[in-house]
Length: 320
Image 1 (cartoon, one colour):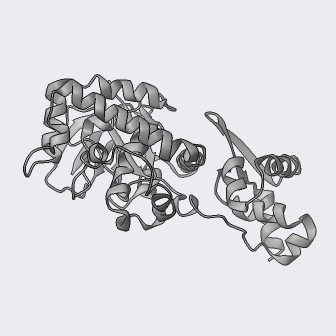
Image 2 (cartoon, rainbow, N blue to C red):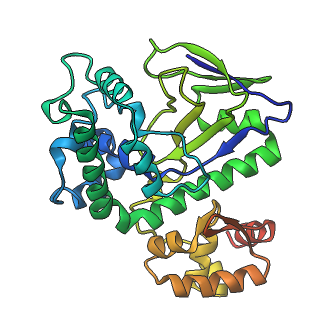
């Protein structure tokens, strides 16, 4: 059990962030054991034959799918850049590197590929991760990021409408906030500590490659919680939602499909992939529907996320 004492009467130190490195390293679980992540099978099949340093990449996890803490540094900004995060990894102190690798490979020590001089190990790890990103992640990152950003927008709306405790409860049954104490029940039950977030704050990082919330296993690490993002089921699928026939006749198949999908926030890029049309066409429809009051929009980072308005909700319900 991890317990974070949240500092500040308005919980203003709780912040959200997206980490490309976090997604990259946690995805090694899916690469190692695809059967545990069935929703990612379209992606894992597509990268199965990629030219990667698989020996180094797969050595960074174990049969329990643990990842060394030095590969998941707390994001320094809400929208971190992979290059900046890899620089942090490359600067990992030798003692920290050895301790984190030993913690993962506790039953016999790190594999040979991770047993050399620390600087050589780090160079190979960073190069392997860079190649993995370029080949397997960069072509899909815009879509992945859109799902992560939509999750953060959803969490923000929950906080506004229902409060911070409701937002945490919505993340997982393993997470609960009572007064100013946040408790996180890890799958690894042997980890147990309590610490304050005063001076550090608490960073919440949505991820597409975990099924349960997780935190650093050491109380010396800055407070951070990785949690499963909403919308994973839509990530690799192309949808043509069945909108009510009356709605299709009234505003057309594409716009009725958009209105049906936008029950949850999404970007134009994500919507284009799911509907199988161009982003340019989707943007034209979204602008017209927003101007008509059927949609609302909010900017997060470099993306604009759209959501059905109250009028859009009534429009949908009136045609069913």
